[in-house]
Structures are given as structure tokens and as C-alpha cells.
Length: 315
Image 1: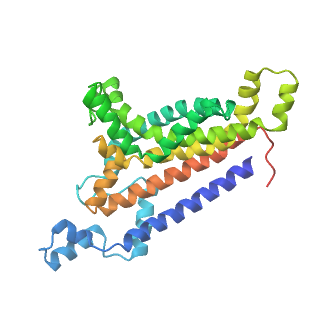
Image 2: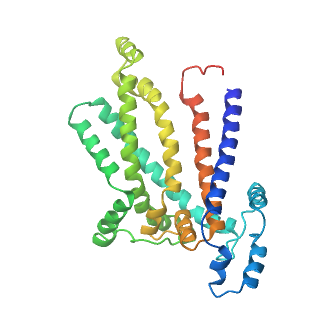
Image 3: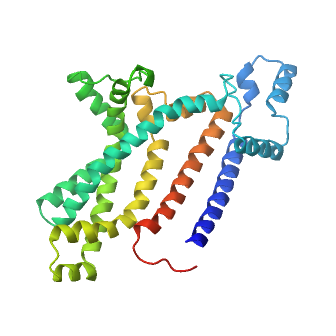
């Protein structure tokens, strides 16, 4: 297990370095000049040159890359060119919304998908199975922002149970903040629940057809014990990968939903930075979100040892 962990950590670092190079080079080749955007088209060449020196844009690309990575390693994310605010401060404020939103959506998605997937697998070919498959097809076909608009029309406009958007802040109290996150979390969760329900169903069907399941039934174990004590744990091995990727996607993929509900989260910050060509913010956010996905994959790989009852080959 130690060798496996060390190997995975090495792969994590190598992938993170490769991702940083891709992000840096992709933004380097974009047309435009950050100094020109900040000062406007009427700025003189002397003023532009002075600002480029101040921002470090006159340095060679490799020097800027090394300085950027060194800053990230020490927690210095730099300063937004547009707002003049430290990026770490901006990111901290936005993560206080995006992470709880992703966690709530993840909990809702898992709570919906796991029972539905198990239910469908135990009723293969029957009405319950077809209903779950139908739900999954709708969830896969409809984008999450469409669910968001639909939820606003039903629960905010028609019923008036929730606000249509905005975030009061955690200082307003836990319940008002949770209410503001509930509809966007549900909009995010429905599409992910559809994907996860199909994966759980497929994994359960494959596991229920294994020889050891038939052996457990032949020994006289109850259907409930066979289902939850043997089949579900082994079916969770492929499901764990999807769960990890879904949580990472919920953090990264909330850009449109956060804008639909006017939530000042990381997704909305990234979209605003792209529109304003605040490339320093875009660069840091894209790498941090990419690093988050890579880290989640690492944690999922390490969690296999606890989930998979089979011995791991020495390699």
C-alpha cells in the first residue's frame, strides 16, 4: 500500500506540473495586452511600457512561469489587474459559497442516485426499473441551468417559497444562507444524480450476477443481507470514481448555475475574469480548479484500498 501511495503521489505532482504548463501556455498565446486593456486604447506607449514593467509582463515567459509557480507554492496568488485586490482574498470569499454549494449538491445527488440505482437493479426489466431509466434519460438530456430556471419558476415565482437568486451571506444566519443555496444545489444535483443512478444500476447488476452472490444466497442469507452486505460494497468500487469526479465537477461546473442564481461564487468570479480579461485571476483559478480535480482523483485512488476487499497486487 505504501508503494502504491508513493506512486500515486508522484503521478499527482507530475500531472499538476503538466496542467500548470498547459494553463500558462494557453493564456500566453491569447491575443491582447493586459496593460492595454487596463489603460485603454488612448494610452501612450510610455505609460503602457511602465505598466508592463510593473505587472512583470516585460519579463521572459519562463521567468514569469517560475515566478508564478513559486508564488503558488508559497500561497502568494498575486493581485487582480482589474480590481487591485489580492486573488487569495477574492478566492476565499467565493469558496465560502462554492464549496458549501458543491457539498450540498453532492449530498442531494448521492441521496437520490444510490437508492434509485439499487432499486432499479433489483427490479430489472420491471416498471420501477423503466421509471428510473426514464428519470436518468431526462436528467442527462436537460442541462442543469434549465433545471435552475424551472426551479425558479416553480418555487420562487409561483409558490414564493424561495428567493429567485442572490446570497445573503453566512453572517445573516445558517438557515437564510442554506435557503439561498438549496435551489441551485438541486439544479446541479439532478443532472449528476441521473448519471450516478445509471452507474449504480449497472454496477449492481454486474455484481448481483457474480458467483459469490449466488453462493451467499445458497447459504441461506437473507436478500437484504446479500444486497447490502455483499453486493453494494463491491458495486461501490466503480461508483467511487464517479462520486469523486462528480464532486470535482460540482465545484468546477457551477459557472452557469451560479450566474442563473446570481451567486457570487468561484464560477461567477471565473466568468467575470474571462469577460474582463483579468488573465492573472483566470490563470490562478483554472490551475487551482484543475489541481482540485487531480487531488480528488488521487483521493479516490487511495480510497480504493478501503473499499475494495480484494488484495492489491504488489507492483
